[in-house]
Structures are given as structure tokens and as C-alpha cells.
Length: 115
Length: 111
Image (tube, rainbow over all chains, first blue to last red; front, side, top):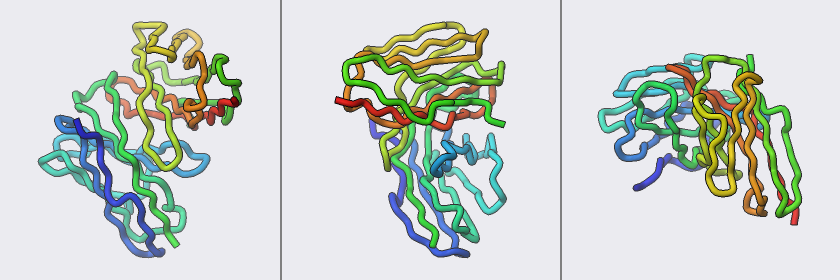
């Protein structure tokens, strides 16, 4: 079974631009979560989507948004990029039953560098 | 508010010996705990999990122990191998609570 895939793997943007990252979950998984990893900050939760609806949201500004399509694929968008947005963005998928006890499986991440 | 804490940013262990990674949590609603392993420039890989109804779960060289009264869990790797060198994250969830990660511990296995 194919794992979680993320595109692109690497991205360089300049301040003020916007960026869209894509994630394809494991087949049969309906929940997709996004995380930001920066040095010394661990994995910070951005948001979770299930059945095309945002189910959970972390403490990030409104410049960070996402969506999920009917085939469970998800995109996240960051507008008006700032230098501090440089990070590894990770996508994780799970079956999405909506209760604790689910294992999330991660993609390889998209490394974003903002200049 | 750091609900999941890994107080040791790094750990160095001799090959063949036991590696013990620790994790503390504050939210008593957490009922499912996981450990992930991460290599540079890759996504975290799921290692092992434990639900709050258990106090131990074993999978090959990896064992996770849960002490609910102390709100503490640990990951034991024995024997440690060079390929185990990576960053290890513990994570916790409960009810509709999203997965909350610790800061990670960098494990180095020395030959």
C-alpha cells in the first residue's frame, strides 16, 4: 500500500509570496493533518481535515489555510509569506474515526525556505 | 503550555546497550500514546503505541512503558543499534484531542 505523498519536496519563495503544498493520504484514510516543524519547536499542529471539513485547528494565524477534496487529498496554503514560515511542513493521514487511539502516518514533508 | 514534554534534548548510548527515552505529559485526558522516529529531511515514522488501559507494550527491540499515576511514559530500545540514531518524538491524544507532540530527543548510538 502506498504511503503518504507530499509535493513538492522542496520550495524556495520570497517574502510576501504565497505557496500551496499538496498531500495525498494513504488509500482508505479520510483524515489528513498538517504540522509545521522548525528547529527547536518540535511538531506544531496546524489543522486536521476529515471528509472535506476542518475538524481541528492549531494556533496559527489566518495566513495558514487548508482544504480537503472529495478523494481525501489535501492542500495547505500560506499567504503573505514571512521569513519565520521557513520550516518542514508535514502531512499525516489516518483512518479518521474521530476518537483517540488512531495512529497517524506521515509523509516525507515539504521543505519551505522563505528568502 | 507544553502538554507533552521530553526533557532530554539528546542522549548518547553505546551500541548494544539499552536506550531509555522519557516523556512526561500533563493532560489527564490523554489515553493513547505513540513514539515516532525521525531521520533528517524525512517525515516521522511510527514506532510503537500504547493505550491507557495497558502499562506495557512490546514490539521486537522496542518496549513502551506507561505510568499513568506519574503521567510518564518511556521507550526502551534493547539492544541499541547504530541505525537507531535519530530524533524520537513522543505524542499523545485523547478523545477528540489532536495529536500533541513532545519536543523530541536526539538519540546517538556510538559504536
